[in-house]
Image 1: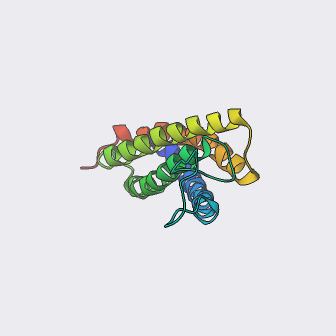
Image 2 (image 1 turned 45 degrees about the vertical axis):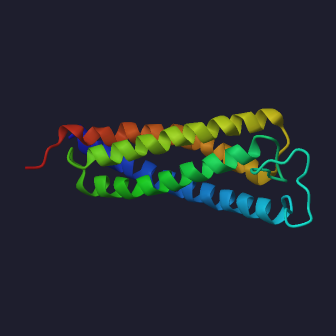
Length: 161
């Protein structure tokens, strides 16, 4: 009985996390597009700038390139983990738990990695509102994804015949 009480909680967290990961992907895509459009121009006849970095982002600080890159990776893996999560919520049994839990754990660790770069970016101060939004979403996601992982383990005692 207690296992079925966790199903609505897990469903809510799954939908919340999926929406937040999609927002992370949207903001991260904007940042990549802006970096490509307004970054260094390199071509024939142009010299490399003295402090060239292949992950230079003109709208942030030194940590922005790493932050956006790992946030995009975490967003893609997190959104993909929602697919396994939807399957697990649908069947809600111990048979579907390993796939959902393992992918959710990988997404959570990547989210923690991106959150670490986000904390470094916060420490360096220079960033715009969209990057601050992405930092906030990753900090929130690091907690809600962990709660989701704990909630889906409620089905581990149920075995379908």
